[in-house]
Every structure is written in C-alpha cells, then in structure tokens.
Image 1: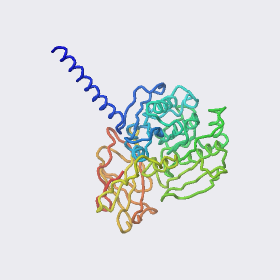
Image 2: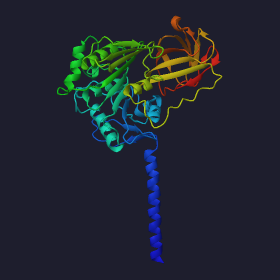
Image 3: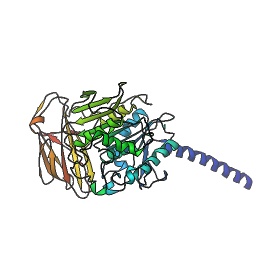
Image 4: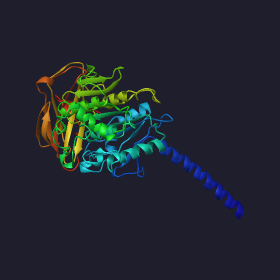
Length: 427
C-alpha cells in the first residue's frame, strides 16, 4: 500500500509538472511586454523589455525602438504604435530603458562614438543578440528607430553597427557624433549645435567608426517637426547631409511629395531607383514625434508591412456623434514637458475659428506655445487658432503644441471641449 501511495504521488507530481510546464510555456509566448534582466554585456546599465506578439513567423524581424529623454521602455511601448504594428505584421520589438542623464541614451561620451565602446550601444547590441538567440529573431531583418534621444541613438547604432541594421527611422534626431561631450548635450534646450559641417565631414564621421566596412549601409528615414522647440528643425538637413554622403548620393532629392497632409517627403534614390534616404518634414509639429500614423510609415519604409500573420484591422472608431476628435501626445522629462494636440474635424461642416479648452489634473503650467494662442487661468487652459489654421475642413486636422513645467505627475487631461462641444480623445 505504501509503495502504491508513493507511485501515485510520483505520477501526480509528474502530471502537475507537465501542466505547469504548459502554463509557463503559454505565459512565455503570450503577447505582453516582458522584462529581460540577464541579456548579456550591459556596460550602459540599461533595462531591456521585449514585446513578442502571439503570432509571429518562425524567424521574425526585430525592431529596436528607443524612447526620448525622460521616458522609458514601457512608456514608449504604451505611447507609440510599434506594438500594435507588431501584432499586425508579426515582428518583435525591443523597448530599452536608458539610465543616464534625465534617462537619455548616451550620445555624448567618447565611448558612444566608438564601436565596442563601454556604454549604451554595446548594451543595445547585447539586447539584439539575445533576441536573435532566445526568440529566434532573423539576423537579416533587424531595424532601429527612436524618438529624440532615441533618434540620436538610432543614427549612432546605424553608424556603429551597419552590418547589423538594415534600416533606421529617426524621429527628431541629430547626426552621429553631433555632441563632443556631456556638457554639449542639452536635451531640454532649443539649440542647434550640429550645423555647419559639410556632407563630406558628416559622412566621414560615420565611415571612421568602421574604417574597413565597405557596405551596404543602412537605409535611413529621417523625421522632424518644423516647429520643434527642443531639437532644432535645422538638424534634419544635417542628418540628410550625413546619410546621403554615406550612400554616395547628392543632397538634392530625386523626388519630393506629400504622402499625407502636412508631411513633405524628400527622397534620395540611387542609380537603380532604390530609395536609400528619405526626409519627412512635419508642418507645425513640435517636439512630439512620432504622432499617429508615423510609426506605420517607418514600418513601411522597413518593408515589414506585408506578409504579416494576421490581416490588418481598423482601429475602433470613436462614437459617431462626436464631431471633434483630439489626440494629445506629451513628452516628459524631469519637471518639464512638451505637448502636441491634434484636432480632427469628424463632422460634415467646416470649423471656422476654433477654441479648445481643457483642465489640467495636476499643477502643469504652460510656458511656451506654437501654432495657437494659449492662455491659462489656474488649471483651466484655453487655446485659440492663429490665422493660418482657423478653418478645419471636414476630415482635416489642425495641430498645435506647447512647452510647460510641472511637479509630481504629468497626467494627461481627461477631456477637451471644442467651441463648447465635448471632443472624443483618440490615440
């Protein structure tokens, strides 16, 4: 009897272990942001988060997506559209968290400009290698993108490890090697420290990081808002000079178009017609990229928007009785922040002159503005159109932005009112 009891206990333990293994395997593969604490060499003291959709190919593509100063990997996962695009097209996204000055990625130290330097780029490469190994990521489909500080690191990773990354998309960045030291790096300022070099000088900075490398170089997509108060719009032209020179192209675009209202895209193609560099100026946008639809444009530039495991799905529309849609995108650092607001006329008649109001849930104070006249009384904010954006046609948009300060938590407004009517908040 005792022997039988022992055998049954052993059998039950084996069944329990098998069930537990199935549960753990399901948890390991179910979609959700997962932190990886031991991913390899980490001289930059970064944190690694991975998003793997429920459905991916046997060897999925990898996108390294990096947040702006003051942000985090989980924050960029929540505020950007890269995770939902991963669900749609079946690729894996790495969302790292920076740890240095104001949670900025190191774009200023001598080590950050050298392949194998003992700082953030080596940590980021460890994350890519880990994802290739543990998630069976395709080493021939690795891409890099980021916003502000993350965009600056996007340019650095493409320059330092060009054999790894097939393409990059930098939102509000500066050229690789822009900042000579930490003192020159001012993430909250509105300076343009990286203008005046020739295309050859910028290109040489990239080539000198890999003197023996002969190509191919990563294709690059570069974004900037024309009213950016933090990273000067002038930096876009410097990035264009750098990457067109690396690819052996002229700084004169081979084509210019408007793929979406407010976007001006310049493309730089090689002799075969393949676009190696493209630059997109976003009219009136502040320091708030990527905004809605921009991540999708980056994924399209990477070539990852086809062949996904599930067909595209349309986002759930706001209630049909709401004629006003508002998208609010903040970018927070320490006790400062910027906000970008986009109003969409979802009605059937034009809006001729607009006033948008909201109430801050905290102690936010607006200190600067663009593309709107803004006043604040206590927590109540009123934004009025300026002359060039007073009319919003049905289906059209008007965008404006502001810079401010806060203490505590920089929570978003819970509601907006346009000309006295409540708006629907969209993301």
